[in-house]
Length: 390
Image (cartoon, rainbow, N blue to C red; front, top):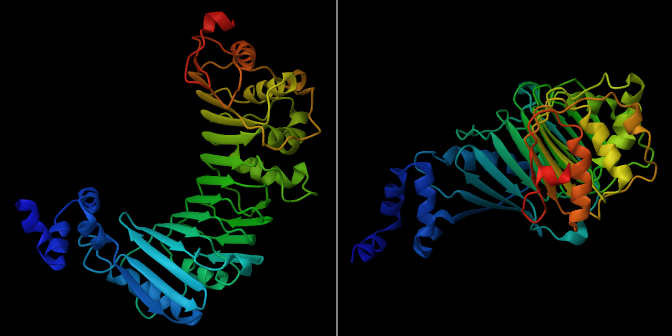
């Protein structure tokens, strides 16, 4: 009976009830029933031109109230032209999703994006938004909507976390943020060839896709770097010296994802003359990606680990589809200064298809370890006995 009484209340009363709940509890009301879920899924539909979109989005953001999230629709569908639309969705904790995936794929073409997130470049709008976007998910931008995306993003002067997803036609990306942007994620943009960053405050850089030509214009130190270039490179003429500035940005990382081929081809040629003086002295967690695990692959991994004296966790992933560099350097181990690992607590294997390879890798890694042996987890979730693998 109590359930029926609640369901019979008008939407305005239900929205008022939600406004008194903490954010997490308010979101959970969408799981109660279709009626409650519909309250959260109301969509504001608008039509206009490219020139209108920035003000429409700003007005949409200005109506959102953090303490009363159902007072106005949290979702916007803006139709710019036939077959071109923008879907915007507001989430709590200053998050905004901009999704352009409704456009027709056959209209796809190459394009570039420029985001200037500095006060003297901020796009002006007639209705200043009261909802300050700090995290933006930008999905499926096309060449038809690239100008719109640039206009909207460049109006978000408080943006701290930018996630760019599935922009298949994106060929060049230029981001400028002098003070705010701290996290940048780029996933599945397979045709991106140049990435220009003027982001001195950037601390986290997550990238999955073919290696573009990265140009970090002003030096900055990343604490978290995921360089998942298992699809190879987008530039056939890319040389090791072209990667040097990126190498300096990841040198002080505490968490790093790296492919074997990237170390062999892009990093080792730049640091090998120093015979070990270049080290990742702050690195605590390494995620290593390789296409297979033979003797040469093990030697390459060992050589990199000798540059990581503070390492605490090691994850080794085998992906048969990962790019394999034909020019591997078999002299890595002999040329690298020997460094013992005194802090390694965990070794985790992922994607291995047989126990023999895991034992072989473990045997070689144990020789690097000083002190208490680490926990070693296999791909099937079981543990290797360190005494057995010694």
